[in-house]
Image 1 (tube, rainbow over the protein chains, first blue to last red):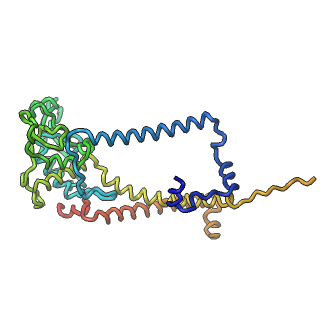
Image 2 (cartoon, rainbow over the protein chains, first blue to last red):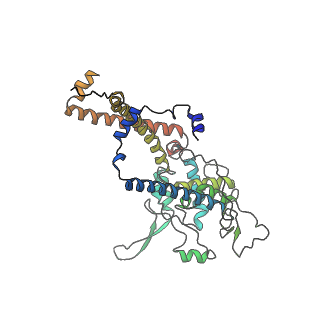
Image 3 (tube, rainbow over the protein chains, first blue to last red):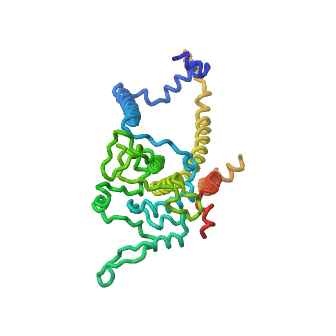
Length: 307
Length: 55
């Protein structure tokens, strides 16, 4: 061990410090006054923390090895990097895909039309989108409920009034709400993309019941959602060729935004945090050197009492 | 250095003013540069880059 360390660090790490400065460091430490019980407690806490961390890591690893489903490969998302924002043109196209395809069965009850303003749509466009839906409102002055066109403050309409209706219409399977689906599924947007593009015929030996389809990325393989994305299933308003993978990529990017609306702010804040913490680190280092300079350069001289 | 000490840091009143004023300028500088870096990295992907098409 010592030989390996020495190879990496040369002599610097292993060089014994002068006895005098070791003594000084010991004087400044507060651990010297701890009772032996305290030291044992601290040691045990450290060991437990490390052990639990190692256990969680090991469990996480073993979970990935179990189960029969295929793990979604990591795609080169344009927002994957530490500082990379979402591609808002893609988010806008993804909204088109959601509106024209997904929203037939999936609700998105935590996203309102006002959330689109300044992200994918201008205020006028978002108002126009909202006005396309009808919302039940009331009671009015006479106590009656009425319907009105949607406003910016309205949330996306749900295709079914409740979960039971959704199950009854879909062979007993419940189409999950898509608001936070990217955060709610292992693999995130990679999983969404792989699932939407991964449909194919069931291999021999896999038995599917009525209304089930085979998708290797879905846990268990048998999914109740049919393949919905095909080439040119919708048309994009900006003229992008609507291939299946393009549709899947755009809707996955849109769902990433609905799951993490703070995504861009967060990454912008990271730059700011690095700047401020970098500045503070430099200052702290300087102050440490400054305060220790007298401690490190002092000399203790023993002067015997003269008799 | 002596000038800075005598005019700003010596009295608590001027020292406090110096801290508050420098905090303001430091905050602005960090804000403006980090936003500029972020928008430089993500040029063409942000809403401000594409909103011209829809207005």
